[in-house]
Image (cartoon, rainbow, N blue to C red; front, side, top):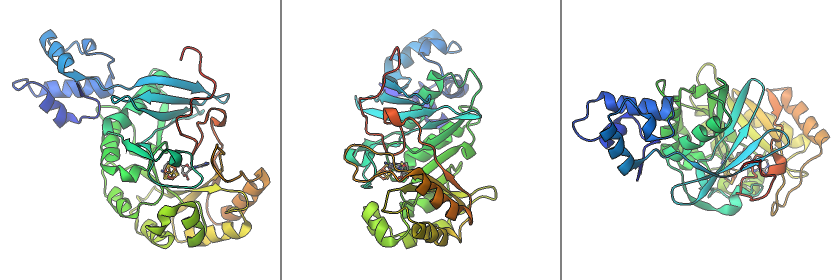
Length: 348
Ligand code: SAH
Ligand code: SF4
C-alpha cells in the first residue's frame, strides 16, 4: 500500500492512473491536506472506479493512535503507530491564544545528550515527510483544532534531531505550509537543533523556511563537550559563528534553549558567559529547568536559581523560563522515550 499523505502535488499526479486529467491531482491534494478526509469514500468528486482503484493500491497514510496520556495541565502525549509497527511520540499543549503541537522527526535520536531521555533510545530510524505531517494532522484533528478554528504552532522538538533528517523535515514544512492545503504559516513552525552546523546553512536557504531554535545548554566549550558530545564534532565556537552567519529575516530572532542542570551549568558565571556568547546575535533565550527521568544523572535547580540566572541574561536580551508541560505523563522536553506510564485518558 502506497501512503499518500507526504506526497506533493506532482507525486500525487504520478500515482493517479495515466490519462486522468490534471485537475484530479489537485482534487486529491485538496482532499488530503485541506479537507483532510478520513477515507477514500469521502472523495466524492472522484468517479467510483477511480476511488476503488486508489483504495486498492494506496492508503491515505494517516497515523493511528496506539495510546494517549493526559496530564493534569491539559497536555496530551500521544504514541502514534507507523506503518512498520513502530510508534512515535507527539505532544499537544493547549494554550489560550494558540495551541502548540510538539512533533518528532526521528524515532529515537542518535545525538547523545547526557540530560535527555530520548538519547537512551538511540536512533531507530528517520521519519518520512508523511509521518511528520501525519502527527500534525492527527493531533489537530483529535483535539478539534480545525473545527474550533484554533491557531496552531508546530515545534519540531519531539524525538530526534531534525537537521539529521532535513530533507524530510523541509518537505513536511512545504506540505504543512501549502496555502491550498494545511495552510500553517512558516512563522508558526520551529525546528530545534542540537547544532548540526553544515545543515544549518542549508536550512537557511529553504523555502518556505521554518524558524530556528538552537539548543545551547552550556556556556563553555568544555562543559558543552561533556553534556553534548556532538560538540567534539561541531564545536561551540563554530556553532556561534554559524548562528552569526545565519540569514535571519527582518522580523526574525534566533531562539536559544538552555537546559539548566543543578550545580553544573546554572551559576551566575554561566549566565554571564551565555550573555557574552550570544551578545553579537539577534536572539532570545528560553531557559528550561531540567525535567528529570530515570537514568538521567542530573538534578533540577531550585526555582530561585533559575530566576537568578534569568535575571542576569535578561539584562542583555529577552529571556524566558519555559514552563514544563505534562511532566506527570513524561511529555515534557527531553522526556520522550515512549514511556508506557502516565494516566491514560478515558477512551484511549
Ligand atoms: N534534538 C533537538 C530537538 C529535540 S530536543 C534538539 O536537541 O534541539 C528539544 C529540547 O529539549 C532541546 O532544547 C533539549 O536541549 C531539551 N531537553 C532535552 N532533554 C531535556 C531534559 N531532560 N529536560 C529539559 N529539557 C531537555
Ligand atoms: Fe537528541 Fe535533542 Fe535529545 Fe540531544 S536533546 S539527544 S539532540 S532529542
